[in-house]
Length: 274
Image 1: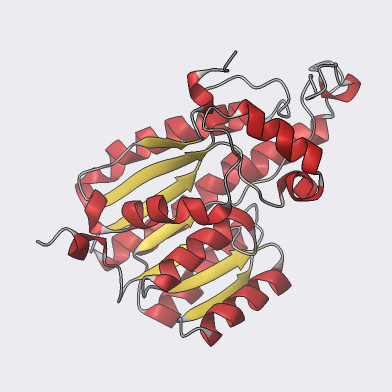
Image 2: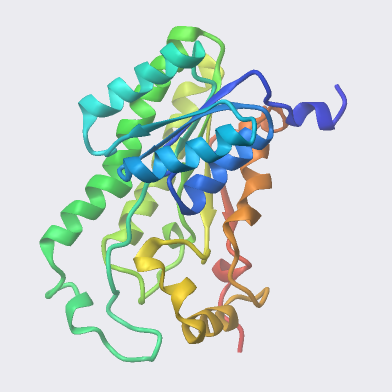
């Protein structure tokens, strides 16, 4: 087969969680731009509707769903609605995630009193694990149910983080263990689902300019400059830069890959310079 032909996903359908902004929106855009029908789901239902309408105006086949990934009944209903609308599910992006607040250290080099293990708010821990880990499980559970029923395989793409493999003291306490568990879950499910032709891979981003953490990288030029200096490639990434990797994992170009955890972090996991 021609190399470029292997990247084609037109005629397929994708379901994306956390798709109203940031990386989830970039994933949905990538799928739509490649001719794939897509459901944009998000707890921000209005945002998902707005972005789905924008993609539809550009000629894409797009719909929206208001969805909290911690609500199992709502997740099952949203996947069923996607299947009813598009005749199946081929590509699943388990992307929705949340920031967990400050870590025990801040970029200025001082301890955060509220970010240490003995002062960290247990409710922040519970909410982070519920969204960043259990929400991934909920998404994959119902997505795989639909893929198995169709019997034509599929691609599951999970948003992990470089924090799954690197200790980062400025990141909230619950975020790293949640993402480390996600990495292991992807590896486990890659093995479990191979028999069904369902591939499970993870994208592990480093710093991207998104709305997470209140969108502070968008609002604070000094913070952006500081983060740029921490990345070996010298810059924080924009969401559009994740699209080619998303298309690769969604398409047949990656049909011999499963259980992979692919870093896209400008080299941050390699260590700090200087």
